[in-house]
Image 1 (cartoon, rainbow, N blue to C red):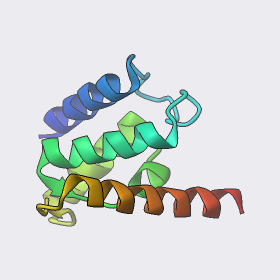
Image 2 (image 1 turned 60 degrees about the horizontal axis):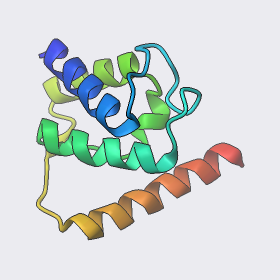
Image 3 (image 1 turned 60 degrees about the vertical axis):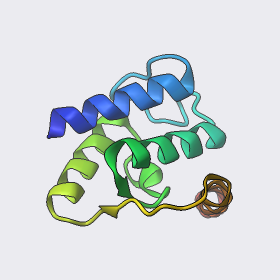
Length: 107
């Protein structure tokens, strides 16, 4: 399952970023913007069929760290099934969460 999650993360990030991101590169240092992270978050939740907070990208800021975390969290049942939420509504919520995380990081 680990390889599947890692492969999915790689595919989604490459699609959203428009280019591959090295496995050990920190997302923001690799040029991913907050809007790209929100898109990756939404697509990963859909692709994996789970829900997890956007803050996971700050706590696990590389592809490798994110894959390891999501693999462990999935196995432990710490991520839940994806809820059906209207796309525009979820995007607004995701962006608010991301802005909050960015403000905390800067502050």
